[in-house]
Length: 396
Ligand code: AMP
Image: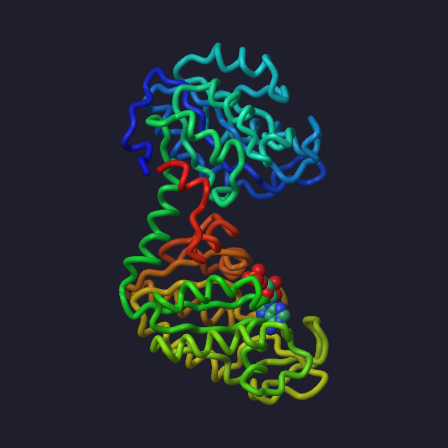
């Protein structure tokens, strides 16, 4: 995989697949512009070389049958112009000759943002004719949209075949892949995975892939109770996937066989209702009373997890350890996130990502203390599962 640092782009029209899938409210205001800002290093580097840029992105999930105002990239074009400090051309053309002409007229230093690629179903279908139409607009292809790299769409994977030598990873995508490769293949030991979140079923492939790589496996969050029940514990009304008890037993057996130390919550803060103001008590996780449900890891568990993290050289964190959205049940996630931050300050390498983990780390103010915060939820999870991401493979 070549990165843009290995290419020459002066005088070229460069197609850049960005991830501008930002939240936009009903009034058309962007409520979180992180993704726009994250695209800047790649865009600036290409502009400094004198390239003309043709930017491509999707936004949300339109029907794929033509223009829909609610999903137009027009607000992104306006904001990008401001944060890039550079003019950005935009037209609401849905991939006709108008776009071809606009691209043909670009000169070095010009920036053209295309309309939402998902206004045509050809994008998500990975249609080759559409990929060729896009490819013909430029001389080189850069993929910087890690968040959609797990999709084999026209602009994320199929298009790359039309640029056998002129295809590159943008800075953001290259950074993600570099960090994930480091975690999966070159992590300093001891390596600890902290896996939380709601369901065993959504994390099972990650767990299985990590068993071969980590020294310690910490499991918290709602998914822990399926493991506790599989061990014969009483879990009251806690989240549980009864059809995954065997899977949980399989993970425990595999950890034992491979010498991976598995840590499950010893105590649990439980509630008599799934809301912040419910009655609370802390009980042993193996003996949660009927009618109560586990909402967070308890203080004894936090202390054990903290100690394991403090002794780790690499930590991967995926998934909150409790219902962090409710203030009364976020202490466990906060304390473990802080412990990972502390370990990082002392020299450990730490990574967070996948699913809701980044939301939890940001909401609790923990992200700034970690070595690497992934921008790709589903893409990071699939990478950790050991899958080949089509958008990354296409650049090889
Ligand atoms: P995921 O997207 O799989 O990482 O799951 C994140 C969700 O898991 C968050 O919305 C948390 O509130 C939820 N969660 C974490 N712990 C628990 C728990 N003990 N009971 C119910 N939901 C939980």
